[in-house]
Amino acid sequence: MSGRRKPRHDAAVAPPFGASPARAPEVPETRDVIPMERPR
View 1 (cartoon, helix red, strand yellow):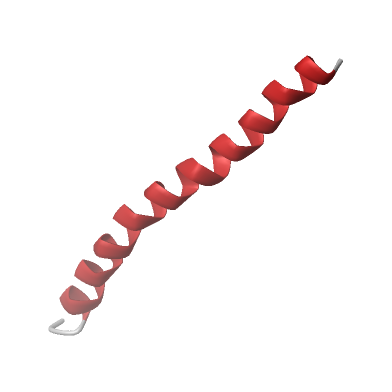
View 2 (cartoon, rainbow, N blue to C red):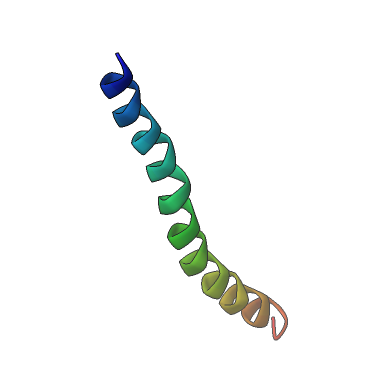
């Protein structure tokens, strides 16, 4: 049963790791929207 619980822990670490890189691209995109709205 210990072996079955180990794979589940890996899945919980995968979501947080993927959210970090996904947020990085969103930060640069938000900067482009702020300067574009300012000149408007």
